[in-house]
Each structure stands twice: as C-alpha cells, then as structure tokens.
Image (cartoon, rainbow, N blue to C red):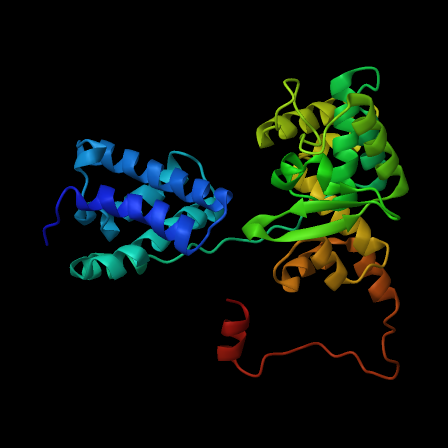
Length: 334
C-alpha cells in the first residue's frame, strides 16, 4: 500500500492543531506529552530507515517499526513499562485519528493498534515518616531567599499532596485567605480541586507572599528570575534538602526523596490519621477512588492493628493440608 510522503506531516498537523487542541480541548500537558512521543518516534524511524523525517510516510508506522521503537525505549533509553505504555497510548491516539481520516491505511492502523500494553508489577508507594518530614522541612536555610521559598513550597506540597506540576503552576491568586485558608490546584486533565491549609501552612505562605510583594498573577513559588519553576528544578531542590539532612536523619539514606514521594507521604499520613479513603482520593485528585487503595496495602502498622483485632476461633482442630491426588499435588507445586 502506497501513501503520499506529504500525508504524514499533514495528518500530524491536523491531529495536534485540529483534533487535540480544538475538538478534544486537550490540556497543554497532554499535548506536550503526545508531542514528545511523536518526536521521539519520528527521530527513531528516520535513523532506522536512513531517511529524513520529512520523507517518512504512513507505511513506516507499521507494527514492526513501532515494536522496534518500543524496544528502543526500554533497552536504549532505559524507560520502564509505565513510560513505554504511556508512549504507546499517545501513538494509539494518533493512529485512531489516522484510521478515521485515511480509510486506505486501516490495515496498517489495525495491526499497529493490536500491539498490547506491557504488564508491570505495581510497587508499593514509598513514603516518609513524620520525623523524616519534619527534618526535611527544617533543612532549607531560613536566612536565604531560596531556603525560605523551599520551606514554604515543601510545606505546601506536604499539606496538599500536590503533584509537582500542580505546585509549579500555582499562582498567588490560587490561595484564598479564608477560615480555613485554601489552595486551588489545577490538576491533570483540567481537573481542579480546593485543598484546606493548616494554620501553620497558611501563616508561612502569608509571610512569604507579603515579604516578597508577590502580585496575584505571580507564581506562588517563583525561581530567582521571578518566573515559574520547572519540575526538574523542584526535584533538585528537594533532593538537595534531603541530602543535607541525611546526617541527622539516617533513615533518609535508604529512601529516594522526590516530589511524588512527598505526595505519597501526605496520603499515608492522612490514612494513618483515620481519614476515609474516599476523602483522600478527592484530596489527591484521583479520578478513580480505587487508585487510593494501594496506600492501605503499604501501611504495615495498619495491617498489624487489623490482625490483632482478629482472634483465632477456639475449638478448631488444626490439620495439615494434604492434596487429594498426585495430580493435585503437582499442580499445587507449580
């Protein structure tokens, strides 16, 4: 099946500018994620096929080449299964659009869409103890502008369980100084939520905004140039604070402290305080409350308390289990 070399560039332009931006009204984060995936794919295909990117066609997006790209992500770029699946989801979205616009390419599209997602083992979430959080929040120097900003930012992240993308996008106007004070977060998929602030958090943020004379449209936690911080910038500041405090809090040496770990920590501490899982799901902005259930499995103390409340029934004779046959024994030992 032959396709015009101009077909792929035109379809990509229509997909991003017409379909994603106008029809789906996708968020800028979604468009950026899809863009990065397609850019990586085109660069890979151009290198593999020894052909300029502008000369690639729809026929080059067959299942064989896409599988080679996914293997490249895992083996060369060292991406995990989750990232691999995320890239595949972006490609699938584009191919579904192609299938509707170019019926002649349906065979290639169907074969490519048949590529399955890769299964992966869901790890239990890492989280910090209350003592570790306290040490981390006290780590940034209070006599420096960047240290005061980091203290306020880390405290707000711990209080709200915000994603790093949400905290860097926060503006001064997103803080409502009521009773209680709240922070308006703009989450994934254009979802928004309002999180109440502790009195300590509200006081720290009020002092931070007043001392720096930040306007309503200013970033709540700007960089040294007064612009919005990058996600990698927040990650580096948090890693630096954790490294500094490791001498006093040795348990942190065994943990990889990241903004997402701080988000997990907020969820775990809410759970340990007796907050209902559905409330925690709303607090974190989870679309499906079942996503929050893996925090329950990560808390060994809660498991121990639940086990202590279950008494072994009396009068039950303990017997050793014996398979009924050699075949069942074989199956049991598989």
